[in-house]
Image 1 (tube, rainbow, N blue to C red):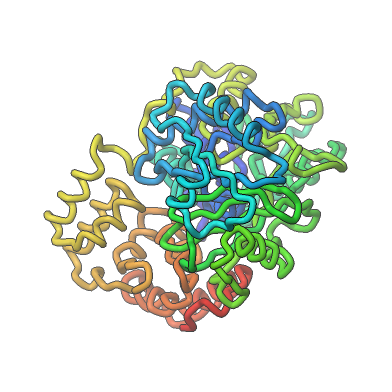
Image 2 (cartoon, rainbow, N blue to C red):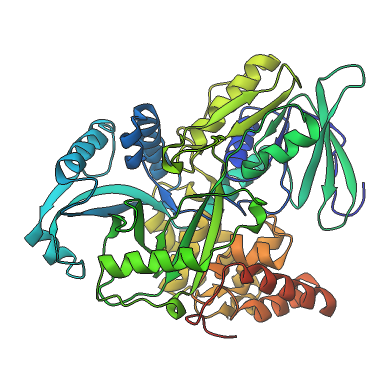
Length: 545
């Protein structure tokens, strides 16, 4: 083996996972915790596609009640509760308001019934039950809402995961700690079959950073490539019908604005009746989403001006004092949902339930995951591992992920841990809060780096407060391979108000000083990050570096 190819890649694996989004990461963790030899292949970076470009909610799927998907709502509510327990540094309770206006498709009676059903399907929850607000109570709570036709609101709780990228990463850190091999920037070109039959025996891999070709062998291969599922299937089993019918969702990010809500809002769009969110997030506001069919390469999905204008207009309609303009949009992003293929019809009616497809007739040993929600990734992973294990004859112990904390949550009291971290390492309360919110108890390792080398205390991103030690930690501990990996999906600097453009040069310099990068690599990495950020369409509200 040479270059970046992991040592031991030529050993046989029990399970090869294609895709390191949240579902692939969950499957890898589940299988590794149950003693399976696991390899994960990701064509780009961990959590870098659909798992990142969403509404950043862990929710029970209130809207799915409209389509009578009761089982999916119950499953979502159950896993929401599990994540609140097992990842409390990343997943936090979120109060939401549903404003009610005359003439809406979803009137007060229907919303109240939905709220009651939502509560009854989660009797074991730790979050408060819903409340109905009359107009007066609502006006006191959210005075910025449009007054004409305002009737009141429903208030309920779901949960927010500010950084699903790190939720995905922690699943893979756990999998790696239990023996899994993680190989990022490595595209699975096609599955390999035994010479005399159709059984899958492994996969051919192209390293996206070096161009090297490698091969891996395994007894089972699960295709969790999200919106790229059909790409691998087409190269391996071209006779299979289309599986994925992706729909595109766009969000915009804006700074706080006049009338900005203190609650998250779940409102009905005036133009088409589609529900959308206005969410306090990361000191900013996240507004979305759209839902349109998308047939192009998922990697090219970018926000259009029409989509941005739609979200601005709906926000200004709901909150008349906002006065949001295009040049106030800090950035926008789009992702493609890997939904089951449906030829036509309302995109909102396409099921959000996942499917685990066994291709045993055409390619024994190959499975694909179609669909899936951020909220229910853990349950999907358990189901996938147990179904594959039944076919392969694995003797699996019980699934541990229902109760086992993710690595950053390995403490009964994060608040006490944060205070001790600050005191023992001389951190400011603000920095200690940042580190624990992102890394949980793993913040101890970053703080230790800062104590051992004072140069790593440098704040390289004033807007977010990120320090040099985080950058080094991203590469040495958290599997970052590029500066874009580190800024977008480890330190989360790329999601600050300036989309990381104010920090990228300092980050490259730190990598040069502490990781041994030469001038050529530093320049290449900075240019790569700037090219990446261009797809987010940073606007006039972004400070220029």
